[in-house]
Length: 382
Image (tube, rainbow, N blue to C red; front, side):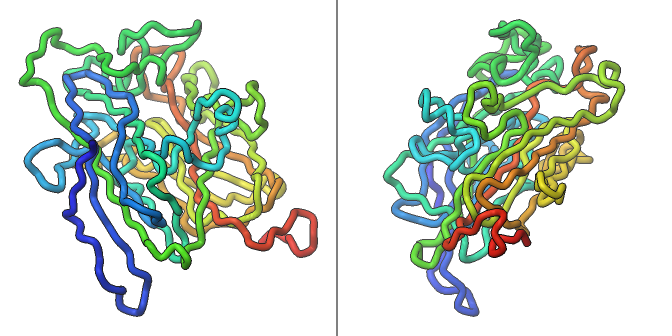
């Protein structure tokens, strides 16, 4: 089972000014052992605070499994955190890519919290009275995808799961790289062909949960995830594809590649926090009202410029967030536009600059107690 650390002690009194009591606790996943070039990609059961709680903050990053009580962070240049997504086995988010579960039981983007290499620079925190209300009637798991880049011949190709780097045979014609070519425990090409047990490094996912227990004072949140490769149409033809490739400049004539999709919001409410998830090569993602073009959230990819942990040059180390929020109405259409640079990137491909990239917008939404509809005088948009 996961290891729980009580280094961050639970608060025992109200904060000055009579603010609600919050609790905070650091947890660790079980230990993970990787060789140079090796890939981890599978769900892991994890511990969580017991009982019914309202989560008000969540952060996570990859640390060494060493003698440190709080964990020493792992540089992205050593082990790339492709993504982590935390969810319950049965209870998942409210959409938009959950329709496949209704038909096949196969969940897509069903997570409650999750990002990737930008983890350390993109913490999630909700202002009072908001919180994600959960309980321990369902098991928790993290889908963890980490790639050990030590001694790899092509670190970028490895971390983008280029099939020719991982040695995994593509499952379909024309598939160049992405999640399907990053099978669990496979390895990217490395300079050395022989390693010993001394080359194995142990890691853990460290995650920090902040929560409240006064549920009666909480406005509950519901999580929605927009994927730029899909739409809320509930048909297989429009299923969220999770990832896509970025063509190279010489094939498009443009230095910017834009992909977009449209989603129809299923309920009245207010988005109180939103953040994008993007990969290397990304510029920004933005959500806008289809009716007016008003941009309600823009997430810019922030790249590292140095060598220290959290500022690794060439890696997405943070994404600007949208904590201001905006109002939504049932049936209202929103566009998601994601922009990637078509120059640079992979050095071993002449047709694409990046493969297996992602373009998501994660949104925490509070429902309205008195629903209003578009078109009614009482439902005018703010």
